Length: 498
Ligand code: NAD
Image (cartoon, rainbow, N blue to C red; front, side):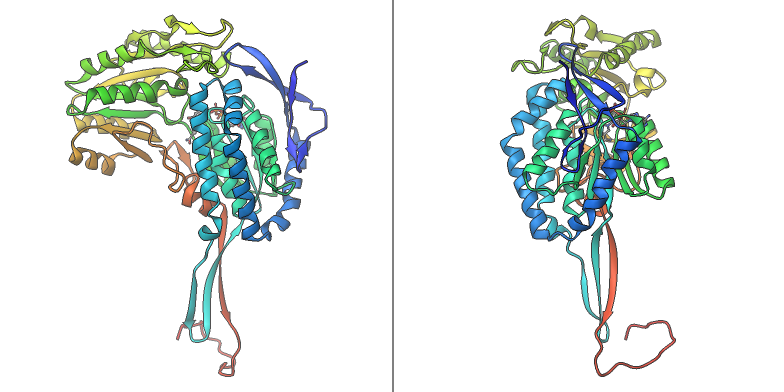
């Protein structure tokens, strides 16, 4: 019998019968491992109602009690991190060590949320006017929706859920329908940690569930991560309905290699960041910009390293790169190999010819390298989101910078150089939200915030860290005077601070 994955509403698994379901694959074998229930409007209402009912009690739960639950959740997550990583690998396909890295980065965000009492402190000004005190409060918004993509089924939900909850909100999480089990595992662990029923709900499904959250009046805010067209749609629809929205979109990340760089370090970085997680990372390096004359040498060093990569079932300890998430995605990515050749790029390594240590039914595509890539080609303009690395040549630092700044995406970028002045200029001039200096995947630590510029983020708040706390609270400023014998009677003038 096929396993069933269902919603988690009001502290328990949903017991109804779904009208629609989706198939969840094991990408390394191609087999259907489960069916996931898809929510209709009825289940959206159930989940939002559960969250709305839990809100008043949770909002007024003491900071001490909220924090205790967050610490308990953190302990459970640390104790069971390998189980969560195995769930990620079984539905996403990324290799176990990579899934473990994802869970570890997720734990950083839980640890940040444990600091809520400190982070939610407001300001207090005594005697702003004579006998008058002014202070600010950071209050939760209410029910918030979190909509996440397939590529980080544990980490991206945990970018938002702990911070939202720690701030006193209640949450409806709508994970990707492609790898939904990590979200349920997280919700069950939160319940075990003592989180009251209804504070975190998991709603599975597709566009119907997302649209349901976008139009429900009880949902006050949406944190979305996914592709740019959907991010734009979620931002426009959600804000038109009066909600606070942060919508993180897709990427095309460039890594500039200056002529003075350590080319072995740069080649290692390009291969690691280009092919880790089979290129299914929004911070993957997809374009290496070689500033001449280093192009030929760099391409040869990258090619040599690619030849040693082991592609195989993510559960095997020696696999370095797993399959793609679905057969449809594999076909889409593979179609770019022909498109690149037709457009005139040089196919240096063809991923279709790679040896694979895994079941023949898996969604495999080996690492691919294109050289001589030009801006007009679809392999350059489109986010491929697979193991396809492009090398573009530039004749100067200025040309490399101009290429990046002309790109509609602005998620992450990196520069490889031994010249501190050049790197300082780059961090100042590049129009990208996250910059690495000799670091290829500059995902900020949990106490900074994550977010791109331009078409990589809609809204003005980045994810997690201080901007996460800002997003999940609204401030209120109180001006207070306790009567004393000196009060001065009626005064129709605008209040002046004296
Ligand atoms: P996606 O946009 O297809 O799906 C994201 C979420 O939106 C899922 O929960 C999905 O069910 C829902 N969705 C899909 N189609 C929808 C529609 N028509 N209407 C409403 N909701 C819809 O993205 P994906 O394929 O799951 O994830 C990969 C994408 O996410 C890539 O573009 C990647 O760059 C991006 N991503 C960005 C970041 C970031 O921080 N900027 C992080 C991770 C992933």
